[in-house]
Image 1 (tube, rainbow, N blue to C red):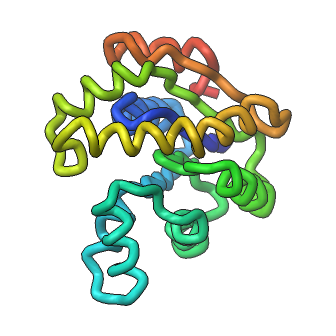
Image 2 (image 1 turned 120 degrees about the horizontal axis):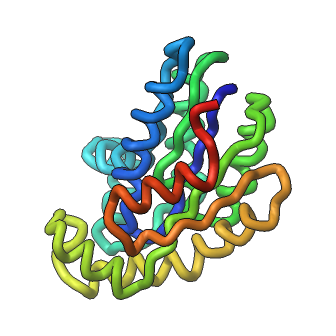
Length: 199
């Protein structure tokens, strides 16, 4: 069965790490050796804001103010990837989308358009304090000080949590909440225990 996985959680919760581990597991157990399309919107935005178009310049200013990018632009990022790269026999892993309720609803329309069966949402739940500590420790340009981090965590609580609840209560999705405040391998084990990805 083709896998459709959506990772969601606060910045610093380990979405990218867990997505990589799960991709390895899916690849290992897939006898057909089908490709995995990995949609990581954060990296697409970082590339986009280096452009010279009007849209890139406006997006860069939003990024520099640590504000959330508008829904239409976030959706454009991942819809472009799906339209240009998704094939009929690919597994699909999302990391960093959606970031708001309206985007989650649009993602549902895309999943139904592509006839993806039983999409799985994995919510890696960590506290705000946990996120702050991890983001400061990793020292990325986005995470230079607590004020910048707090703005991102503010909009997660304001905008992204409604999307989390949308997935939790939508019977189209299989929703799993995992405690992210554990060692990486323990989090991975909980994800595997929640759902058998070898099938």
